[in-house]
Image 1: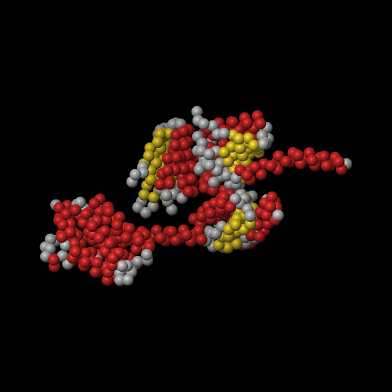
Image 2 (image 1 turned 120 degrees about the vertical axis):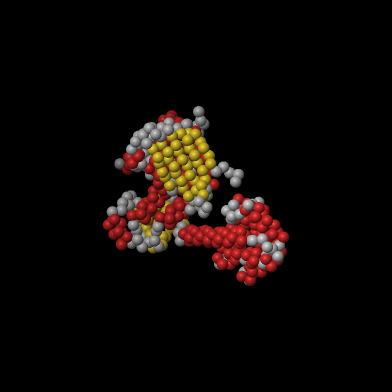
Length: 135
Length: 135
Length: 276
C-alpha cells in the first residue's frame, strides 16, 4: 500500500478545519464510500472539528481507513482537552447550543454517520469518534 | 488573511460564485462584503452559486441564511443556486433548512427568478398610467 | 524444528513436482470435465504450486502465515473467478483438495518422510478456498440486489422540466434512499425544476416512509426544485391522517396527471415555451 492509512491533524485555527475536511474526504474516498455517504461524513467531521475549536479550545483529529475483511470504512476521532460537556443528553438535543450556533453540531453529526460515540466529563475534555462503512 | 470571494455585478444583480471550500472567516467576510455592495450599488438581487461546494455545514448554512436576511432588510432578494444533490440530502439529514432562502437549479434560473420583481416596478407604473388614461 | 521440516517438505515437492502435479491435475480434470480447459487448469495449478513451494521454502507453516500471502491472493482470485462463472462450491474446492491425490502418491515414489503437515496445510487451503468462494458469492448477491434496486426505481422525464418516479412495492429505508438520490441527480442532469413521486403502487405508508418522502421534498427544494407526491389512494390518505403524519406544506395530488398539470401551471413560463 502506498497510500496513507492514518493521519493526525492538529486543529487550532479556521484553516485547520478546512484541512480536516480535505483529509477526511480523501480517506472517505479511499474507503469507497458512496458520494452521499462521503458528503455526510465530511460534513459531520467539519461540525465536530469546529465544535472542538469553539468549545474545546482546539484539539487533535485522527482519521483512518478501517477494514473488517469484507467492507471498508472510514473512522475519525476528535479529541480536545477543553472543559468537557457537563450534560451530554442536553448537548445531544437538536437545537440546543451553548455557543450561539444552531445547536446541530453534535446531534446533527450523529445522524450523518454510521457509528457515533462520545466520551466526556466536566474538566476532562471530550473525545468523539465517528465511523461509516461502505455499503 | 485569506483571499476574499469576488462579487460580480450584472445589471441590478450581484453574483457570487463560491468555487472553493470556504474557511469560516472567509465566509463571514463574504457576508460583510455583500451587505456593503448591496447598499453601495442599490442591487435588487443577489445570486449565490454554490455548485462548486462539496459540503455545506451548519456554518456555511447559517451564512447563507444570514445573507438572505440581511439582503431582505436592504430590499434585495437572495437566491442560492446550484446546490448538489449529495449536499442537499446531507443538509436535510443534518437538520438545516435554509429557512426563507429562495433556491434555483442554476444561475440562469436564479436570474429568471429575480426578473419579475425587477419588472414589477415598471408594471406598477404602467398599470397606474393605463388606469389614469382610462379615467 | 518445524520451519526446517516445512522447508524439507518444499524440497520433496520440488523433487517430485511432475508426479504430484500430474496426479493432482488428473483428479481435478475428472471433476471439472467440460467446465474448463486442461491448459487453463495447468496454468492455474502451476501458479498455486509455485506459490505453495515458495511459501514453504520461506518457512510458512499455516495458511495465515506471511510467506503464504501470495498463495492466499492466488486462491482468492481463483475462487472468486469460479463463483462469478457459476461453478459449484464443490467444483471450486476440488481444485485444491485434489492436491492430496498427488501427496498420497508420494510414498509410492519412495518418499519416506511424513507428509502429514502438508496434508494438514492442504486442508487449510481448501477451507480458505471455500471461504473466498462464499465471500465472492455474497458480493455478487449484494451487487445484484443493488442493480435490482436501481431497476425498480426508474426516474423518467415526462415533460420538459418535469421528471417523475413511479414507486411500486414496499418502501424500506434503503430503497427510499436510492429513490431520493436518483431523483435528485436526475433533476440536475435534465435541468428539471419539477419532480413528481407517484405512490399509486405503494401498498402502505407508515411514519418512516412518510419521513423519507418528506426529506426528499425538502432536499429538492434546497436544490431549487418543487416536488409533488401523487397517487395517494384513499386508504393511504386515511392512514396518514390516522397516524397523525404531518405532510406540512408538501404538495399532494390524487393522480400523476393532476400533478403534471399542476407542475406546468405553477411554472407558466416553462409551460409557455413547451406549448409554443
